[in-house]
Amino acid sequence: MTESILKIEQVSLAFGGVKALSDVSFEVAKGSVFSIIGPNGAGKTSMLNCISGRYQPNSGKIIFQGDEITDLAPNDRADLGMGRTFQNLALFGHLSVLDNIMVGRHHLLKNNWITGPLYWASSAQNEELQHRRKVEEVIDFLEISHIRKSIAGTLSYGLRKRVELARAMALNPKLILLDEPMAGMNLEEKEDMARYVLDLNEEFDITVVMIEHDMGVVMDISHEVMVLDFGKKLICGLPDEVMADPDVKRAYLGIEDEEIQEAS
Amino acid sequence: MSSLALRPCGDFRTSYKQDNTIFETKTIRRMAIIAILVLCTAPLFLDGYLLTLCIQISYLGIAALGLNILVGYTGQISLGHGAFFGFGAFASAWLNTSFQIPVFLSIPLAGFMTMAVGMMFGLPAARIKGLYLAIATLASQFIIEDFFARADWFSGGSYGAAAEPLSMFGFVFDTDQSFYYVALFALVTMFIWACNLLRSRDGRAFVAIRDHYLSAEIMGIKLNKYRLLSFGISSFYAGIGGALYAHYLGYVSAEGFTIFLSIQFLAMIIIGGLGSVKGTLMGVIFMVFLPEVLESAVSVLKDTDWGNVPMVVDGLAYIKEMAIGLVIIGFLIFEPEGLAHRWAQIKNYWKFYPFSY
Image (cartoon, rainbow over all chains, first blue to last red; front, side, top):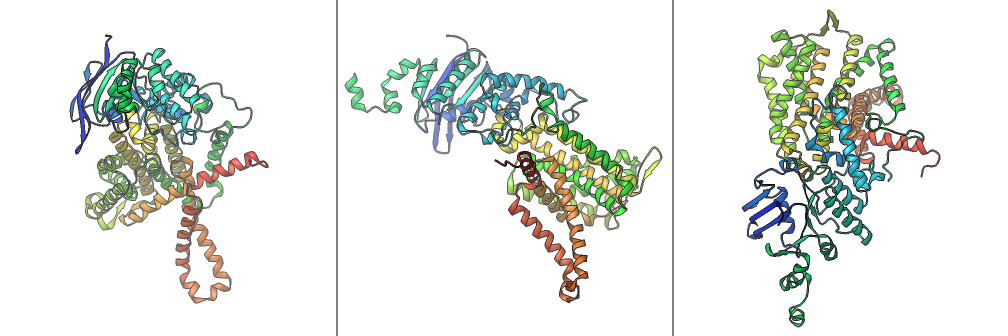
């Protein structure tokens, strides 16, 4: 097994009486595409929120690149190299696409509220231009150059998802968390998005943790798949193994018990 | 992509630098520079009264811009801006008279003092939002007002405080004509400062927090720090505006800095356009000139037959006040996005004339 970039140890999360996650453990290998699947309410997004710091798990540990980050604030995780996109669009609606992506560079920029406004006299202008170049690379990669000046809130759904991905990529992350990157897209957009996910994984060497419902995509592009059901980990393994597992079929893929028995 | 920047034909940008300018096109920048140069000659042909209004626009504009950074760009609300404006006025006068700090230094120092006070009151602001924040800042308004009334050493109590006119290198800016230049310089500087802030890292962080604070946090923006910072910058602007006001009038008394002034600042930025630097200036100009225009309209009314009706004559002052309220309500209904938006509409209309589609 290759080196792991993210290690989840016995993470539990409860909202009052509702146990969103109970004792979930898994490891994500460096450079892999790791998918989390499961029925609605299984705790997939809760898991992602624990990793990105939105929720603090009640117990358990989250280890990123060898350091424990369980109690770290979400904004500090960006510095460590963790980016994410959201299930429901979370762009800055009134900013242009370009500015949205520039916000992704925030933790890499150095100027503050005094040197920034001095613009010409300080390094602010140079810094802006340098990072603009980096941002343009991301824009080129995701093929959104035609909309770079548009206001993010006016874009179509598929494009907004792509801009979100661009913003997360601008962070220069080592690990990127994608919450349903292909939800609500048509076939063509899904194909594009799957291609981007693969490319960013291979070309930019970014490890991907992804939640996705489209089984075709999940099986095609992931190296490893984990299934969650009612906050518990059912199985974690290669896509084919997971597909063949009877528990997974029952919990998620929607095959009746009799059919499983018939098949076996 | 209706929102693509509508640039004239032939305006091609070949470097990122050209794409990052404050003004959209070179023509707009030239026009802005010409406008400032024309304004520099204004004391030659404007009478003292109009100059007073211009100076008023300057110090109110600086303070309103601060409020717009807080409300329009960061999405936090403040009902205590009038009190911060007053604090800046007293602080500058106090620094000058008690410590003999020259006025040109005491004005920025007063800005920083106000910033410190604003951040103190902004501490809860970093944690609460919306209506709750409105009430918390309302408390700051009343606490500071009370401080003015009680702290005789600072504000001179009910007598008020005297503020010496600004002097530099032996030249005293004590006339409308000379102070006009100080006001213009301060206005231009503070507006450029804000424009640059908003196109660099921290300004973008403010807008990110306003639009979606959850994802802003994921992007590495520390929410509490930036909300507090926005409060500080907004108070800094209020302090500078207040200090200019103090040294222009030469006398500060606490009566002017009530909740009414805070509401007026809010009205200015709402009419001008939340989240727009040039809208702020438009809103301030509108709010300063509106009473004047109505005043002259009322005096015209006096000369007509209506001037003989006792009810009208007695009520003229009230008619003026009511008309101001009416105009503001009309604005909120018909142009809720402010004068800046209206301006953009007019520009677009002419750009495509006569094919408006």
